[in-house]
Length: 251
Image 1 (tube, rainbow, N blue to C red):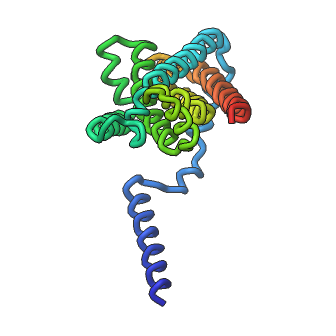
Image 2 (image 1 turned 135 degrees about the horizontal axis):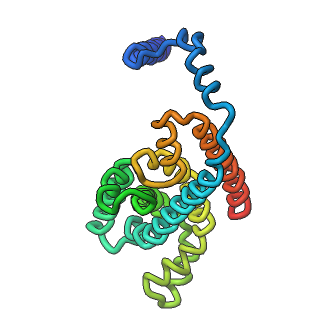
Image 3 (image 1 turned 60 degrees about the vertical axis):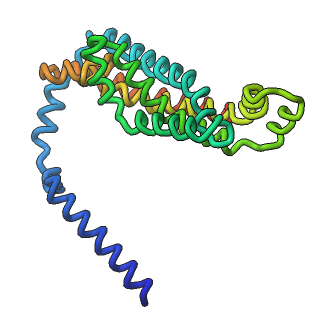
């Protein structure tokens, strides 16, 4: 009976929070019955302005460049830091807790906040996007790789250490070969996520297709927005399929 009462209370609490959230956000399913604004948007989007297709493809390429470079730089920085953030490879507790805290802090800051900091620092454009993606991915990959380091099997490490090798060789020869496939899988997944993040970063001037979409939308050029959206959809589908293919080959 006690368990039933507890489950009922939790269900009631969930319903109360859902109602509170619906009231606070003005959630109303009846609004979907009015399609006039949606139909007006579609009408103004047709026919699409295919003259922006070439700039859209160029912006898609820039989006991929930002996501790739931001992920690659983050991976290069995260690999050494992750060994300092793992309890079994950190030189001491001070370094372990310090690096962990730094990674946790930058992981907690959304990419768009970093972009808002870097845009006025390095000006509008892709550079700000690369820096924002790099920092956030550094926090995420650093934590994920540190957990892989901590979970690595002891056998290969002990075999390398038994040969008299220093700690750095134990890490590079006893641990890294074990975790490398998962590291690459995590890195490519972060690149997929970064592609989507770059779309949002473009709204604050950090480059990519998102910036072009935002400009066209603010100027009410819906026939150009339509083409931008099609390009974004094609990019997301391509990245999803490519990511699944790579992960199936890596792991």
